[in-house]
Image (cartoon, rainbow, N blue to C red; front, side, top):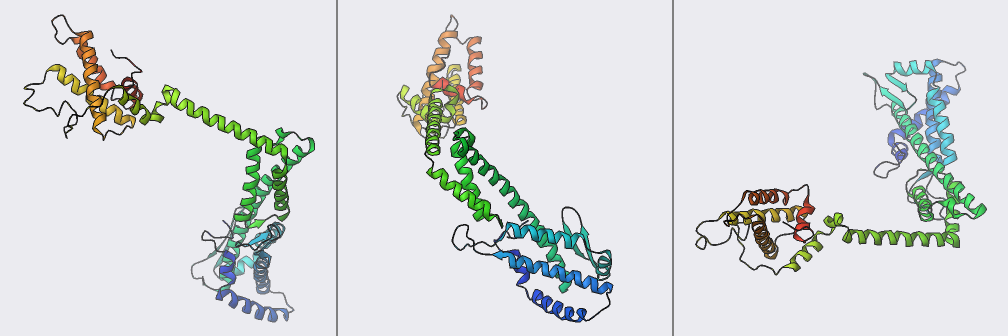
Amino acid sequence: KSLVGRNGDFLLYRLTGSEIYACLRERLRSISETAQRLTVVTQEKLAFQWLVEVFQWVEEIEKAVTDYSSLDGYKRTRLFIDFNSATRILMKGEDIFFNVEDVTKEILRAQKISIRLTPQRIAVVVLKGGVANSPGAHLLRWGALLYGCIKSDVDRAEDWEHRASTAIETYKSFSLDGSISHLGNATRFRDNVENLIDEAVNDLTIQNEEAFQILRDLREKIECSDLVKKQMKIEQVHIEEEEFQVEIDRYENPRNMAFARFEVLDSILKRLPPCHEDDSDSGTIFDSLNASSIIKQSGRDKSRVFLEKSLVKGMETFGIELSQVDARGFCSLFAMNLENAIFDKFKSTKETISNEYRDKIRSLRFNLQDPKNPLLCARVLSGDIKIP
């Protein structure tokens, strides 16, 4: 995908720095001297000359690599290739690999080496019975790999150049008539220029020095432009106003109560004094009452337990921490008051439990702990919804 590997290594040097590459260089030099003395052009000589062209192409890549640039005026930790040189090398590689003679392919196939060409890639395959680690096969496999890497890097550089040209032309339009509207959002435009510069310095293996220098000059113009700085200040004020409005909506809009659940709990606890009853592992205050104090739970006592458990589950669904006894005590007191209000409204003439009372308790029991509607429980506890 790139001449720079995932670990930051420059892949080209894994080939040119290897012993097999040095061996190949010596063999090609020795055979070339012999081949030059042959006046007859044979198929083997054509195949050998093509292999030499591949080797010279790899050496051309190595010569084009540099580790410094006048772009930023200091030594760089990353290696790169000039855009024009990379484009020329890529075109030469296309000519070498995609225009290989059929006779050369036949000779390579006789040596159990197959070259497979598609518009997207070049593949060199050592067939069964071939010598995979021979210098020639090693060079061709690496040549195909390097071609694919350079092509990907050039494509990436061309995409960067297109985005850089768009930014440059946009600023030119602004410079001609002074209309800030050409930049759209001035802050985003400034950030886009900064990102393009950072991308070129840190990510691109193929560099367009001319476009990079223009972007650096453009960044300085932006920093010195009073009109641009004024517009960015206006945009910053607008952003701060939007953030402030979001905070207002967060606390004033009931639908946003879920984003302020701990503030809701504070307001709930202030409405009634905290309960300091001794909590137990049974889960509710009513459950923790001593059995000797109540021989048998009445229907109303059970209703209060049901309501308390529903309120506790509703608050837990809402995301409120219930580790403190005050929170559970408040749910118990609230459940008692809620049950009393429901009983007073739906009681029968004989002070007994009515069917309407049972239906209301049953409805609240399930709705208050409904995980699909956690706001209902919070609004009931905060007094936003009156029941009954």
